[in-house]
Amino acid sequence: MILRGAPALSAFRHSKLLEQLKQKVSAVSGLYAEFAHFADVTDVLTREEQQVLDRLLKYGPSVPVQEPSGRLFLVLPRFGTISPWSSKASDIARNCGLSKVQRIERGIAFYVEGQFSDVEAQAIADSLHDRMTQLVLGDHEQAAGLFSHAQPKPLTAVDILGGGRAALEKANVEL
Image (cartoon, rainbow, N blue to C red; front, side, top):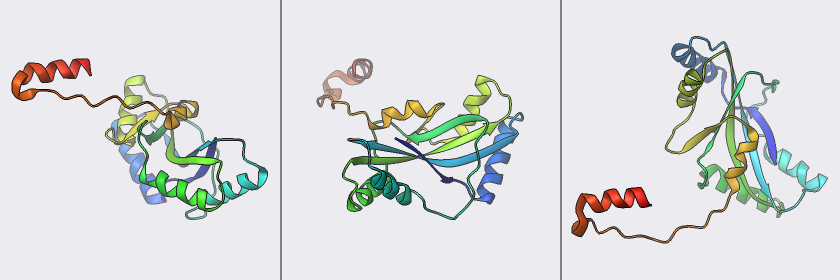
């Protein structure tokens, strides 16, 4: 389930980020950013449950939401991680009686206007996220991976003292 949120940037931050993007890619002509919420639910929510969830996800200053245009850069926590925001929001949802909501996660949908190449788009994406903790997608549907449940691999030990650098390089390739 995908729910649009409020604008994600203050006027100051919006202006600053737009200027940074224009310095990297001169073809950038506009920017809009809003929060995007993703809910992992066990069953379809009733109308009342949907209203409670909608109210929970309306926070921050009251700013009119605009209809986005431009190329989407959806910044999310890396797949396989749970953000601190998600932990707290999911707890709050359960405490509000939303037992069908297993987890809520938040990202930022950046819409960048202008004509730019794939190389320039990559430069824009690099400016919008922290590659250590976040990823960038080009489509809301790709966000389904947020809630995938992979089986952890068993712990593997590498004998660096006995095998040296070769053992470490071998483990790097095999694991």
